Length: 398
Ligand SMILES: Nc1ncnc2c1ncn2[C@@H]1O[C@H](COP(=O)(O)OP(=O)(O)O)[C@@H](O)[C@H]1O
Ligand SMILES: O=C(OP(=O)(O)O)[C@H](O)COP(=O)(O)O
Image (cartoon, rainbow, N blue to C red; front, side, top):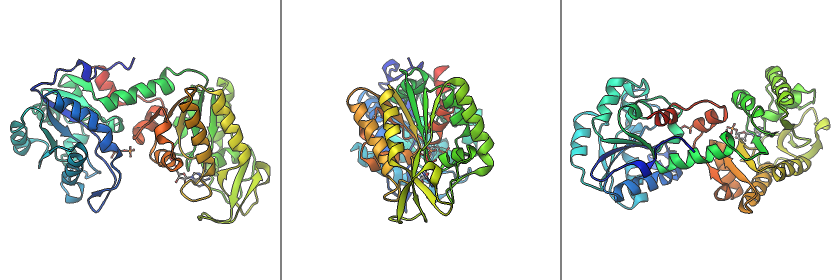
């Protein structure tokens, strides 16, 4: 169904397996503050090591622009991976050349090695064929388990798949299966929930969604631009007024495709963007001129829940309000819990992604109840935009 070879098709015993992972995790003074991405790639690493493969992990960290820097070294991440795995992880000071070759040569069956940041070489981001060849020379086969970096056509995410027998790792496989269920071959009706701060970062995404889904819920700061476009006053709310024609075009397109658009019918308004700020719920026609919309109101929440009840598939990106500051998290939390309950009851396939979306679902305490929550930010958005991801395409044509 997903059109790629997986670990089921790979013979790994005794072989040097180059495994591309995404270890681009948040850190504070070298300490990893969220290990989700590390935990996601453990099954692939364990499976290959347990089957007698020699695991060579390839990853980038930060955006060092081709130069070496202590702050972008993967060395501290190797320690975190080892801790999570409960087995040793060797580290090589460079991802190509003598340090890498020496470390690879020392690997026994079942051993695990992490190579230093691929982006310490500018050739990585240029997808330089010579650099990809140098990486390929270190392995016998290639496994890509980094969906969240698959929107980059880099040597370690794309080039390598063209040089070695290439397979999807278990996380990549799960991600592609979930995405196929979410939007590529979903069960209809499909409802998309899109929120977040701005329209400007999600124009392509909204345009793609209105041609694919049956209903689109627009919430968060971006809803204000749509409300402004249909002549509803939004007071001092976040609003990209210059994008009103774009919002109108998306609304017109939705009419053509028969996609129902759900905009807020009421909103929680405060005078300032601050936790616990005095707030009041107004009908959407009556937003005070000095007020700021920070969440959807209770009637809007009921409509969103009803739209979720009508759907068999849900795709979600972006919070419905300023969920980081209470009580403006209520719309997001209520909708997330409702979707989670429908999913647990076996009535909904729910797929969510995006940095703040994952944080919002965790905040609501229901991320584990969704069918799939992607750890990808940019790659998930590009997929929602309907773009082909170079890392995935390379696996498909391998
Ligand atoms: N009504 C609103 N006014 C201001 N900011 C909002 C509003 N609704 C949501 N936001 C903000 O949008 C941000 C998330 O947007 P975004 O980065 O687009 O989401 P994601 O990372 O999931 O794609 C959050 O920080 C949230 O506080
Ligand atoms: O963390 C990442 O991006 P994301 O936060 O958009 O998911 C990926 O590792 C890609 O990194 P990049 O955006 O520096 O190419």
